[in-house]
Image 1 (cartoon, rainbow, N blue to C red):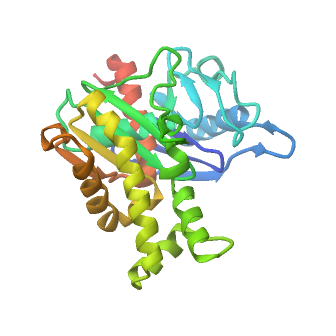
Image 2: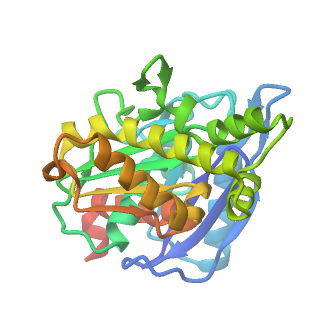
Length: 299
């Protein structure tokens, strides 16, 4: 079985072929996303159609296309229903209609954070009916919720937009994103620009202000996670994003902050872990979603 998985981001589009068990067939490609912020246009649909055609020409028969994409995605209709400033003029793009009609292939598509959550669930050691909270921490904070092994999409497919949740007078992503961590450390030290690497390098040198900034970041994450834990009672919390490369530093601090705030250890999830699949999570999750949407094809 050959499933073409495509991960569409605001900067790059990554693709590869997979079998029905999620094994890569070694056909990875990466190219810049056809987006012009200046002109407020994109050529993503044509780019994806050309990509599918290239794979078909090189590989022969494909069984389907599985897409993970930024934006709010109507998985039933196969189209983008909302997108932010990073991909202009994306709303309304109908991948299902175009790929099924022009390339003759079945398609599944879902939001990239939901896809990453499915990837971690599928390839991780979780029960088939597990409930998970998955966060992607970066410029903002994205989220996905699995209940009994299935993504909860919500009425308008926007469930999991946890970055907008209120934390005190702020939004969750304003205090618990990598952007917030860097901004706070820069303010403490009087620097103009700081990266996450700068903060953790300073922490490793014993910098007290870096320790303070990371502590505040961890506490903000715990504060935002707390209502999710009470509301959903998940089996696990999975934390992803580039900053979680520092999981050895962050996870103990986040867990401790949760323990200090939670009513009782009884409410804590069994596992609080860093995401393990890196940039491949979205593609793997897209493949899993495709297999759920088209069960007959994997027989």
